Each structure stands twice: as C-alpha cells, then as structure tokens.
Length: 142
Image (cartoon, rainbow, N blue to C red):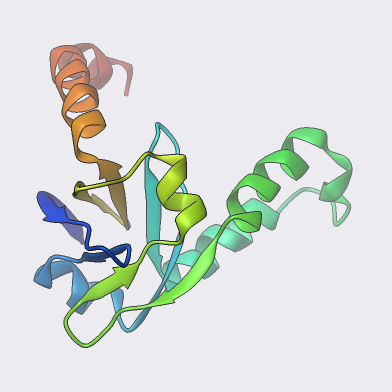
C-alpha cells in the first residue's frame, strides 16, 4: 500500500526522486499520466493494467461510441508515458506533464493506496488545507 506525504526537489533534468518506501512497491518501470485535481498519477505497471481494463471495459465492445468515454480515455491514455525508475530512485517527468501542473522547484509526492500522486508543492498545500476543513463532511458522504 502506498501511503504518506513527501516533499522532493525536481532537478534541472525534470527528475524527481521517489520515496524509498514507494520504490520497492512500484518496481523498475512506472506509468505517469495526467491525474485529476491538478496532479499527476503514477502507477506501477500491474496496477496500470487493471486501470486500463476498467477504463476500456463496457457493456459493449463498442464503447468508443460513447463521447465521454472517448474523451476521458484520450485524456488518460494519450498523455500517459512509461518511465524507468533509475538506480537511485528517480523518474523523469515528461515536459508536457510537468507543464500541465506547473511543476518546478519542489514536488509533493503523495501515496494514495494504489497510486502515487505528484503535485506542485504549493498547490498541494492549498488543496490539503481545503480538504482537511471538509474531512468530516466528506466522510459522512462515504
């Protein structure tokens, strides 16, 4: 299980170091893709395969006929990249994903059970503060 919050520096080559605990869980290759709420999602390969099957799944083998499904799949698959975890635990964040969340300087690396999220550190703090104030109401809705 991927849990915890870490702040790591983005180096001049767009690499960010994954926390040691995450490296063991994720393996040597990961999928990085646009996430929701202004973050990036990082999946281990086996988890990405599960997500892919669920996104592609439908009551019909003609799921590409549904506009919302096509649009979301383009969003997730079209901008996804397979990246290697180097020998010291860094991954390269592609420029187009880095720009999407305005990532520079420092990144918040968040473990969210089955995936890792990468956030612009300042945006993460804002988001976290809002959610912390709503935690009771959010729990009630679950």
